Length: 529
Image 1 (cartoon, rainbow, N blue to C red):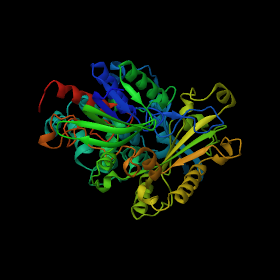
Image 2: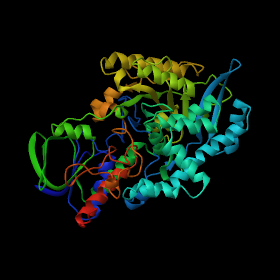
Image 3: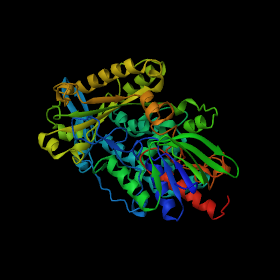
Image 4: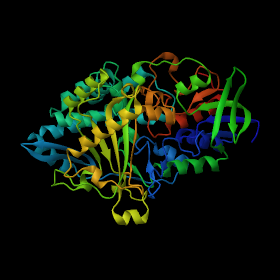
């Protein structure tokens, strides 16, 4: 290990690895320090249940925001597959179980399913018109995600050319997202399906004046101009492994189990003190990239950190290993059809507003909105051949309207209670309890684990369990002084954010890692703004 580097990157999550690969390729000396005993951060896979050879993504699950340009630039050998089903939402009509099935491969199937639910052909057209707005927005904005921040007013003028573009700006940037959803679709179930992308991971509602829901929706809807969430072959661990390879081949030095003890971020000199293998080290750096949240940075610098309420995380994650998929109450659909997409539970539009109100009053919602994903129906390579042959599958459940505040005082008993409630919510739509389908360890314990916002905060350092490190921001400069910046700058010279907490961060994207690297290269060229 040298005593001085061009760039020291604190945190070996996927964004830090992206930055390391770009900077190493540019000929800079790069040191990556990771506190865990593995690289990849939240975007990795692990063998959660020791008795079974299944590599499960503990925190992240799908990929939408990773730009194809980064994949090409870094030569990443990853394959992303389309899920045949976009979403399945079970319902009961006239005492009979049914489901709304929206397809990624057949528009006609979705049209017929929605017509059966609503009896109104205009609902499918309204849904298409609504989603056309996010496609229009993505066409104008996506390429700017890997460029300096565009000026809001200049960007708005791009949306002034016709009524469709004007409506996209109005619906997604100017007014609360709920108004547009209510203009375009009338069915409560369909409204709820659409709105979930505006709140998963964050604590918000359709008419939130902060527009937090709009920002969250955009990051779920503009990836690579389509917004489609795809399954990475080999799991998220494959993405992390390829980024690790790219960083290593670029010449970056990477150390795990490195415990940062102090940072010195002066105007002229920057240094990092850390422990590695019970030995103390200090390295100097021309640039320091921070691949964790501002809350962790503030703690290391012994500074206060108190963001507003929009930064609170709101998610509950359950990972399961199944011996087999469960039978559905809506038995006209196969479990493979229903679970290969996003399986929505108790996510009606009005129901989610009720659950938000209850959680706002620090009450556990009577019905917990949640959604379920089955990675292995699209890619079963995360399972050993023996498990695949035996019919095993993974299942991941995300609970919404479960903010950090609900778990802050009694995390463990609340975790157990919420897990039971979430499984009850799922079981209401099954023909058998999901518990009967769980694999069991040798000691008889079911293969299931849950993570609360408090658990996520403890394990990953994310402020109040926010999976995006904080409240997402619009992907443009909202003040004159930030026009042309990269959205990674801090108050310290040559210290930049390269993680999800940067502007245009959040999600498994690599975007802030790329942008922090570009900021370093720009600074080295002597470019000033």
